[in-house]
Image (tube, rainbow, N blue to C red):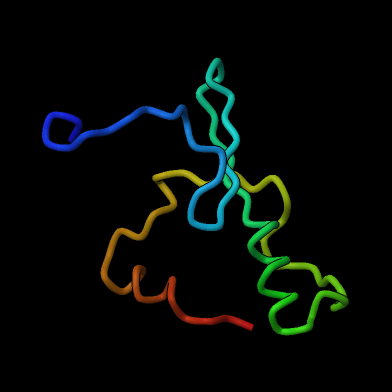
Length: 83
């Protein structure tokens, strides 16, 4: 893109589109965090004092490509809200 547009490299992003980005370059790891964005949304709707609840996904779950949907049906099932 820099061959077509006048650009300036400002270093790797630490925050973009409501997500905080942390990296461990040596271990080739990347973490995304939306904590700040969630706080802004909660404040917008006056819910900043809401109680925390547990989610169905345990902390530390590692996702992999092998867990990706293999069929159209599996892909559609990903978007179904489960209680």
